[in-house]
Amino acid sequence: MGPDATPVDVILLDLELNRELMLERIGPLADAGHRVVVFSAHGGPAMVKAALDAGACAYLTKDEAREHCLATLLAVGTDRPYVTRSLAGGMLADPQLSGREREALLLWFQGMDMAAVARRMEKADGSGTAITKDTVKQYLDRARVKYARVGRSVPSRFALLARAIEDGLIRPEDVGDYRSAAANQRATRAS
Amino acid sequence: MPILRSSAADRAKKIYDKGAVRGALAIAGTWHFGNDLPAALLTWQKVHPAGLGLAVWCAYTVVGVVAAVALLRGRRLEPFAVWICTAVLLAGTAALHLSAGSGGIFEWPNWAWGAVGWLGLLVLWRHDVEATVAFLSANAIITTAALLSSTGPDRYQLAMLLGVVYGTASLQLGALLGARMITETARRAAAAREAGDRVLARGIAAEETRLERRRRYATARAAAEDLLAGLAGGALDPDDPMVRARCAIAAARLRRLVTETDDVPDPLLHDLRAAADVAERRGAAVTLDQVGAVGDLPTEVRQALVEAPTEVLAAAHGTARVTVVSTGDDISVSVLADGDTPGVVGPPPGADVSLSVEREDGQLWVQTRWRRSAQPSSTTTKSSSTVSVPGQRQTRSTASTSS
Image 1 (cartoon, chains in turn red, purple):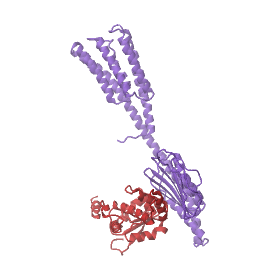
Image 2 (cartoon, one colour):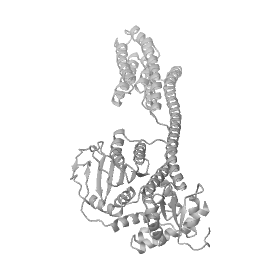
Image 3 (cartoon, chains in turn red, cyan):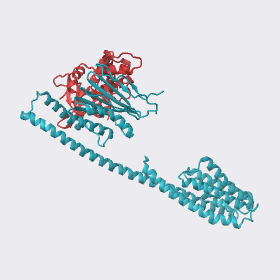
Image 4 (cartoon, helix red, strand yellow):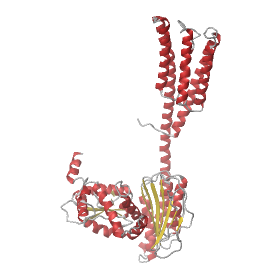
């Protein structure tokens, strides 16, 4: 596979092909401009983090494929964030999350649907302010974008950030510490 | 170099330190009774005022006993006691110097300055070595001053003084440093051995985990094999919802085995896995996901965390999702079960673990949560109605309310 292969919107990459971990294949695919969704039986946070760090756009375990596969592919295909439960688990350890984002990620990871997370968070809020499903999704997506901001720079991640700004999910100044792909490549070459 | 810290190492250090203390006490005691006491007794009239030597000896005895009692109890003298004791010791030296007068530095009646080192060693045992060096130096300075002020500098006497100071101080410092080195070496040896034991224990535990996993895998495989054989042979119909449910359960079970990554038994996960196994045997499909390492938990906390989720799993018969999330000081265990799983009926958990129970849209969500830094506080039980109203949440939480 290479950049001049038939144009594809999204690559769904099984992380374990022929009993071999495909982690190191993610980087070249992402560098070539492909959007990679990792599909795996392993849902551990370490594996999720490794896949995302390598440049994957989303992570999908085989347990959650039935529920989330299509939505993940559609979101990733339009450079929008999509947070599966396994991805939420991988991101929970991220220290830059806000308290609300962390709470939303936790409840989502525990298996609640968006509506249930929204109801639960409404109750947790002392002011009694209602939280909608959309707000929950916003918390999750913003957490995902925050996570992408400090990761390895690949075109798909840049597109995700650009789309997030376009959609009003984050402000341009929030992307201040984003490292450009060129800087990253220079670092790779140096090493 | 990283210093290994462990209980066994500290124990070894204590044992060797105790031995060294006894050695130092034996030397100091022998010297105090074998040399100082005869000197003080036989020359008690030769000093002025008469009996000063005996008085100093008695004061030194008190200091020695105080130090010995503290050391034998495994402690060291408190700073204020150190100050008093060293002052008494040095005052005794100075007093006998004054009393002995000119030329008496090396005479028997002036025994104190040569004897005070061993007692000083005891007083300053388990304090910094520098303190002992300072004490021995102070004694040497006082003695030198006494020598110089009596007859003026006398090369012969000065050389003798240096010889005596060097001879005694080197013995005393040598004993002190030797003891320290032995205890430190013992501590390191014990730490290294304990580290070795830990590696061995980890290996044994990992092997046990592997065998246990293998046994569970054999069971899960047999179940999957039956299903596959049935499907392949046409005995089982893939359109049958029962068959599909069985397939889902078998797949979930195999997947859980495949994704287990811990190589050492984690008691909390072990309890939850056991509950999940039971639920699966009754026909529930269980997924178990974990974020973060749980680490060591007090037993009562672990039990409180696991109790309600286990209860839910024991009654679950649709699908159930179990999650364990440990981020920083916050540990939460949750079960989301569908179907008409009965709610939790057990008593509220103790050990500062909070419990949340909600039921809505045919789903039961139970979460136990514990914060490592939880302040001990009054535990209040807030009970809302437990009458099941469709679409309405039931919450029973024992939240640790900080007042």
